[in-house]
Length: 194
Image 1 (cartoon, rainbow, N blue to C red):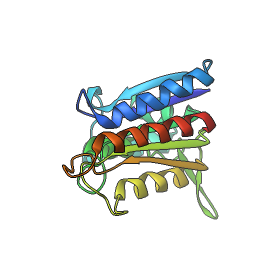
Image 2: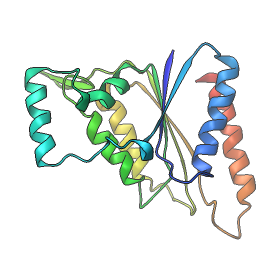
Image 3: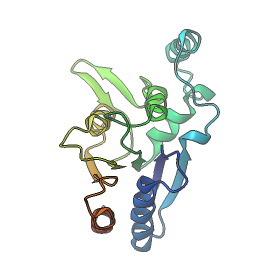
């Protein structure tokens, strides 16, 4: 099984990444044959938002069905994976902008989704996606990032969406170590059945 970790964490000591790495560590003990690829979005120099120039090129390539063009490397990689893990901290009601830029790059009609007479159909191999996030404050159920990533799953034909959240990690009155440890335990439990 090929698993892609999409790392949208900028801080070296990211709590979100710590949670993701713990999940992967426990998962690997049970599934040592599986192959992990980590894509560190902040290190990807070629990853850029779509502007007039590259949208024009993108549309021309889609029309010609030139799926092997370098512009589609992220979409092709995503579509071929068996499972996906997204690790992104909670920022500004959702997630860091670099993740949105990445998602723009993988929304390619003909690679990750297509249309038929009933609407969109997903073309991705993945059967599961896990979205991992941490937040400094309490979210009160208001994580637009979760809603967005869950919608991406539906668009791309990924049947199972899992969500792992540790919130309130910067609230001084709360036991933040306990909160993070509870999320790590939840990650461990999820990794055993994922």
